[in-house]
Structure formats: structure tokens, C-alpha cells
Length: 140
Image (cartoon, rainbow, N blue to C red; front, top):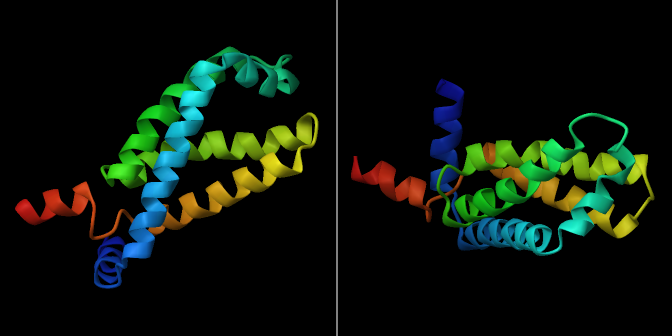
């Protein structure tokens, strides 16, 4: 607990607007992906085609879109950012693995890898100084 607290103090002392803009952009990107999965559910079903033989493909389909919608909003506003990113990690790892199990698409792999790296950064960094988490913490 002490290490997380010291990391959080460091993050709050070194918060810059570009990092907040990056967090907001990550949240908006994930939210837009969720909207596209809801609007065009056939794309999501096609993505999970390599996993059809395994149980849980339908469960994953019903998990991805809502997790992207809710998680994207939470990340963009900086509310429960670490928890929202933890919910996104299985989806992002699955997005990378699907490229190797099915048809390889370099653009999708690059997109998923970049989003995963940015998400891992914010998992450790936190939501930053200009977020709902920070404002609620200051009101206590």
C-alpha cells in the first residue's frame, strides 16, 4: 500500500495536461469502439470467428461492447480509472491474440498493442490531477 501511495503522490506532482488529454483520448477511443461494436455487431461476431469452437465466445461478445461503453466513459472522466482499465485488459489481450489465431491484420494488431500499452501506463499512473477521482479525493 505504501508503494501505491508514493506512486500516486509522484503522479499528482508530475501531472501535465498532455497526459490528461491522452487519458481522455483513450477513453473516447474505447467508447467509440464500443459504439461501433453495438451498431455493427456482425463485425464483433466475425472477430470472434476463430474462437467459435471454444465455449464462451457468446459470453465474450456480450462482455466486450458494454465494457467498452462504460469503461471508455469512466476512463475519459477519470473516475475509477484503474478499475475501468483492469476491465479492459482481457479485451485488449484478446484483441491481440485474435490476430494470431485467425486472419492476421497488422493494422488491428498495431491498434490493439498501442491501446494496451497506453492502458498499462494509466493502470500504474492513475487518472491524474485533472480527473473526477482527484476532485473527489480533495473534497474529503
